[in-house]
Length: 102
Ligand SMILES: [Zn+2]
Image (cartoon, rainbow, N blue to C red):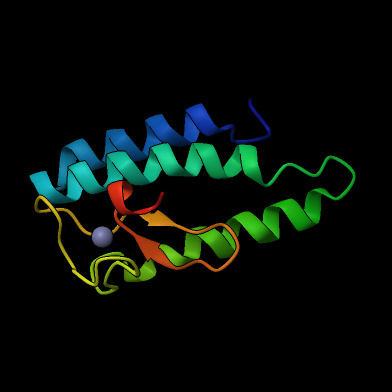
């Protein structure tokens, strides 16, 4: 049995669950969030301090608790093309639409 959860496995588990239970907006939002989570896992690499990596990633992931309640920090809107701001800044955890984050 696998003793760790890599980004690709996490991605497929979340998407599998989402396909069963979610509406279209939630599905598209979670598709984007899981892509961002894969990027976050790459960002929070610190081989000498795995506890810091886990804590940082979980703090970042927890910022999605307000996925449908936080406006975009750039455009100020809750929805853009029907989707909420799905990107979270790695340092500040502020919410941005995928197209507003650059
Ligand atoms: Zn925006």
